[in-house]
Image 1 (tube, helix red, strand yellow):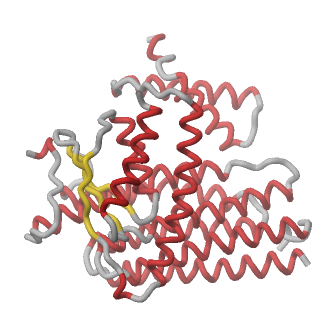
Image 2 (tube, rainbow over the protein chains, first blue to last red):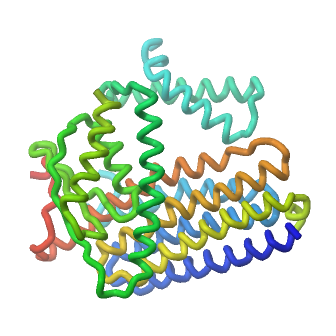
Image 3 (cartoon, rainbow over the protein chains, first blue to last red):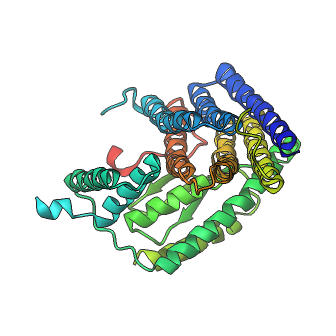
Length: 93
Length: 161
Length: 119
């Protein structure tokens, strides 16, 4: 019983997160300006990290957690670099 | 050199805890590596010459954390309603608020709280005039936002004296 | 599907509630990103996924691994710490650069963001 509940709810959650990824991706593609695309990319990072965590629950292994942690850290650095670039035209002043 | 190694005991302990959590182990070897990392972080930070932090009153800090948690849940629901509402009923805009606090750490915490709470976004702060520029998604009542910020300020004043 | 079998019913229900609530919040945030008309409205939308969305999924993961491994698993707190510390910085920087760009193109109805050191 608990197996049925859990596998269904994780599947539904993954579908919802997948739709969220699609929304973020269409914002990246649609723009209209560079800051909108960066915002979409940032949302995509966080959502994909959550997808990895749900895969971790489904498989019961730790590997997905490590990947999620790396995405959480690197996504921040990437977005900050892009935002900085928009402001000044260079990343390191 | 020794003074710089032990300059930030709270930071060193925090790094140690993060390291042990990351490795999911409290074996002596990991404790040694974590302590070394924490002390190295203190040396690195003291090279930046940050202004001194005068935080106190752990009870006030816990009360602030609880208050912010509740506020984030409440505004999550509010913003979710706004997203699902039809287009016409939305009113967002910029807002200027005069801040009373001027401690850099208190301002940092306030900036993180306001931005992490859905529906409000810290945009700019001018240290000469003490004016904060805020963007809010649900700009129905300016006075209400001012009183929310004033509530945070009062709690932060209790912590950063 | 190996890890899912040995879980008591109460834990399965709680994990389901957390994971569904978290992902629903993230989806609503992403919908907001799609639906809002101006950039300054859109910038509010990702905070939904970064606050309650992340908390929900992380709580589900913590509960699941704590029950199946029969010990307290708390390393998900680290992701929570990283996300809550970094998202405000990202959004603030992005909004400031967007304002800077919009003003540089002559949209004078927007407020001025030049800080003291720029003057």
